Image (cartoon, rainbow, N blue to C red; front, top):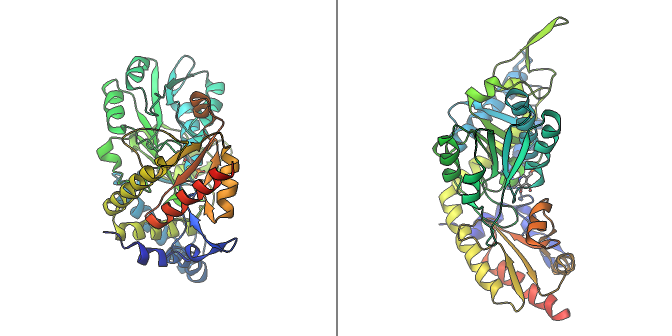
Length: 404
Ligand code: PLP
């Protein structure tokens, strides 16, 4: 059971007012707010243990290194990776997928090969593949999205061939809220010997993710979407694949030996972590993961499911309401349009009522084209949101609707 009132007291920003109204923060898919313990862990780390990691023999450097490596172990446990060597720290999901696309393509892709993504991907799981496709000549194939906002699994089956070298797909859509059948996709792909990369930006904060139970070959997520700081994220990769992939960037820390005749690279995961890493960010991310673990991912998933179900029901009672994305398997996000009201008008007017939602294409322009809409209004939820906030949202939408 979640004690939402007590949880809210952990997040100082939730006590803010905007335009003289209590803040109703429903933009959690873009970024989540931070509990005091995460905020404190950043200033504590700067105040007490700041020193560059991995390079120093002095006390502070070793302490900072230990804390960063403890953070890696925390991430490993959190997603149940087999080894900390499979946990690469990045700046976030975007960098994780860019690293993956760049290094995977260099190791495994050539002209005529195919990589499958889907029609509901965020730009960060489209554009990195397009960049590498133009370099290596492989072809991107797209799993179509049905009218309900689900992946067309039959079409996926038909896309698989001996040319397919990777499927890279989102676990949860940041627009539709659809939870894709990742286990089913991985089982299908693996039966053809094809690895699967998962964009977990919108899943890790909401549902328990076990990369080994899923069988994911790669899994990417962002710290800031799971109550951690900005600038830190994770790429999980199976060791056997990461070993074969060349470094993404060159510089300090990722090398074993450098000479002008050639360079050998460090072991995993450091091979992929060139330069001074955001060690303060990893320490604070671990604190955020401790925080959600203390609440419990199952309790979080149950609470958010019930909140989201309540919100769907309440919003559907509003005349002219059109919910975008009708999957029965959903999480965290509700996108909608009301009558002919432009999403940005709705968002701007809700903002004046203190309600923070996101409007626009949500970095998923191909999905907007598929749905034939310019954008949506998106409310996205966290375990710190309440039914009262849903009521405020619904009343706000009703008020805005009457103005048009
Ligand atoms: N993938 C999905 C599904 C997302 O929703 C987002 C961010 O909204 C990203 C990737 C990119 O995350 P970041 O900007 O933290 O790198």
